[in-house]
Image 1: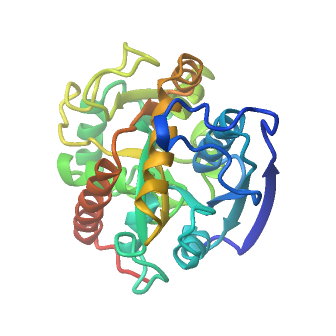
Image 2: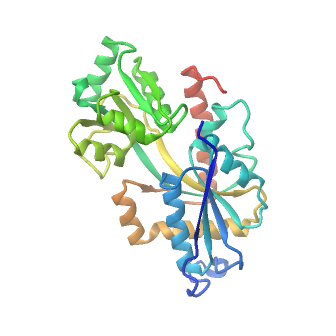
Image 3: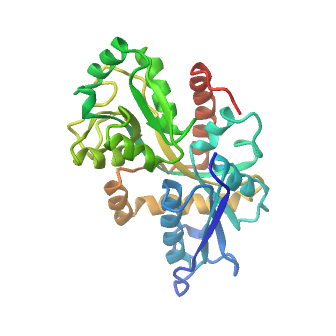
Length: 328
């Protein structure tokens, strides 16, 4: 569990901009209120959802003249901030910008103070990152097939880290273990940075992590990226095979970030913010920034995000159940 904390940073952006310039016709966002719109992020400043929330706040602020606040409500694996949005008035003043831990938490806790389907109105998927399987050079493996062979020869000996029980990084490991038929020990950390530091130092054998972080570690020389989880090779390093190409298909987990509103938020507000996200993702400058961070756009209608939530909630529950993870 993460310690309870709350940090609040306000973005008052683009107040001189003309309202309604998003190019969304009669449904343009415009400056809809004198009060700031709040994006609650249930994770710390600098995390993936926080970075995405700030990017969206900056873009919408410049385009509409509306004031936006990014409010970090950290605690209980994201449950504190998420519950705050579930309880918020459905008036278009409060939104949740979060990660796919939203659906994983239903398998990690016996009770949570929200329902990821019933308590929210999906607005839009924003971006996702494929995962990489990265190992320390001390393991002596140069391919995914060699990792599988070593893990089968030495069951329970290899350690893989993650930022915590049930994090996407952990779920990726469990899915890999199930698909490859191997026994690799999971070592949960309290933060991603600690796991990455120990991987770079050879204190753990490997880790599943977002592509950008894995490639950054590999450039230091002691960590090797064996494969990516996407359907096609990552633009970041096309020399690295996909999991399927490397001999272990079905490891198609990713880390996604999305924006949701409280249940009952009027459909026209959801539609306007959905259009704003899609327009942002189509901007060449935004595309370039996403490419530099190995992030892929999601976008599409709210229904697409709704399908992602329902699919992943069922899928990861099955993976964690097979892994023997007991809800707290």
